[in-house]
Image 1 (spheres, rainbow, N blue to C red):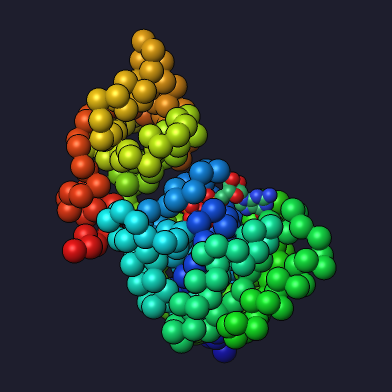
Image 2: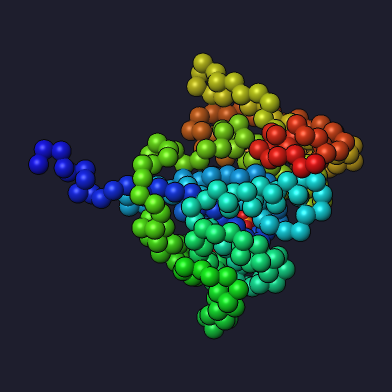
Length: 306
Ligand SMILES: Nc1nc2c(ncn2[C@@H]2O[C@H](COP(=O)(O)OP(=O)(O)OP(=O)(O)O)[C@@H](O)[C@H]2O)c(=O)[nH]1
């Protein structure tokens, strides 16, 4: 057989997996772990993820495209509503839905409402109980039973996205369950988030880590300029939008020390990801009501809710 060798390796599989779950359940941590690289920003604060970010992982013969959806919660502001719509929209486009629950928090809060919403979604669903490093085994079993009573899951997994325990089983399952078909992306691609947007997300993560109270929630980062230089370095200019003058002062810090710290942390990480020297310039601008500006929503890849 002259050309049969590729066939014997088995047909390729591929598909889209929507990660749904309450905010702070660990969705970004899990995608980053499964993809093996940082494609989605993580922080201990809730509502870090705004738009759908896809991480792409190869496992056995399968290419698994993760849609890391914004945490689903009760929408209040316009931006919140857009995030929730985007999360459910992502679920409807997927081949498989993965519900991630923080086992320590259980079904309290938004988890209950998500389970209700999932009843209307017809794709196969799996339940993933995360943060098992924090809970006792008997509580996990009770939680799995309670969730399975409300929605029919084809499989239940218990994992720790943080230390990796159980994650391999999830990948094995996905790799053999997704539909047969050609891969959607080239083998070495791990995200379809444009680099400019990923760079903005990284700076936003540093902002989240550095600033407290409400400021991170009323700020937004955009990459405005991206210039590849002849010496192999790149010059990146980003704007941090805040809503008030007082917030601008906080973002800059005394003598500019806060913005300098954010900038150098972001620059270091960007140089690592891009594998080239980065010159990063951050500007803080006040834009009142950016949360009601359709253009900002487009930049974040979200539809502007009426
Ligand atoms: N102990 C423990 N902590 C975890 C685990 N997985 C994630 N975390 C932590 O939980 C917090 C939230 O994680 P994220 O990955 O940002 O959660 P998310 O669901 O993407 O959050 P949103 O963007 O708000 O929707 C972070 O502080 C993580 O380090 C885990 O398995 N065990």
